Image 1 (cartoon, rainbow, N blue to C red):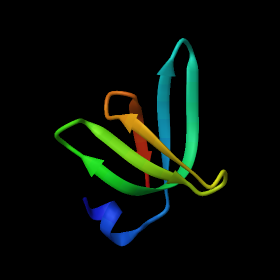
Image 2: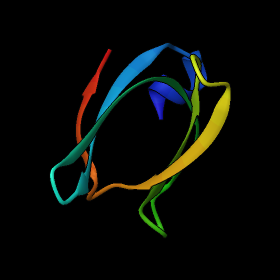
Image 3: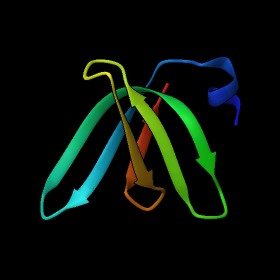
Image 4: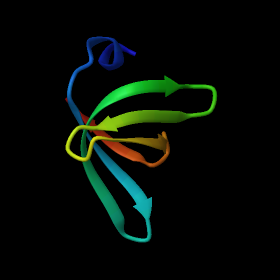
Length: 61
């Protein structure tokens, strides 16, 4: 994935369900197409999160 290789800062809009939406400034650590997971590093909280691709509504570069 191009964004992972360039280590570019992006913003993810994630829908966790039940009306919960997350707006996360992050960098992509790993994109696993087989398990449909995206692992990201949240730059503000300094934590690693993993989301399924179906939860991600938008990727803003």
